[in-house]
Length: 184
Image 1 (cartoon, helix red, strand yellow):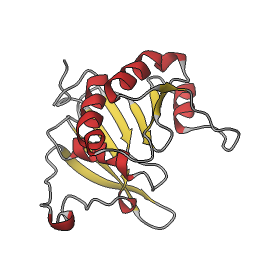
Image 2 (cartoon, helix red, strand yellow):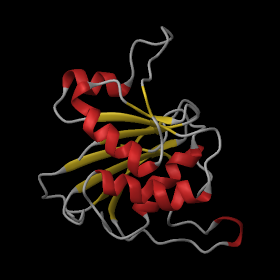
Image 3 (cartoon, one colour):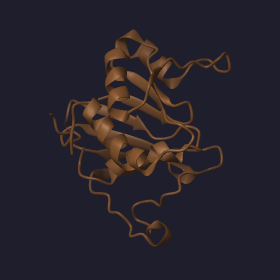
Image 4 (spheres, one colour):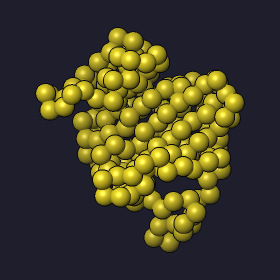
């Protein structure tokens, strides 16, 4: 199993929308602050409509040819899936685009080019395979745009309304890494 100490991993989270403090701040509700050991750089890459920072963390070896972008939350009200990426960011150092969302409960299996990866994610995260679409309420999704225009694979993972502690801190991070052939 390949270790992700070499790849460069960029984790983008809507920090202002999350409950967890930034690494340099004190821990929440009496818990100790966790130090960021895997990230070598933190950059504000934009701001939300309400002015909160959209922060990205670089992890791994910047010289690595393998790159991955994981987006923890898009809509600002999906703090559960963001915890999976925070766990990776705050853990030991760790080539795909995966959007984690709530509440549709499943792994998107809309694309032929991503079917095998979607199946791996589905098995490793314990979520069913489903086909997600916009129902004519949008002009496409980020993963649709990526898969149509760029090489590589983009997938959407939808958790249910409420995520368990195990999903956030055990099966989420471990399942994500196992799906890309990596380990801590």
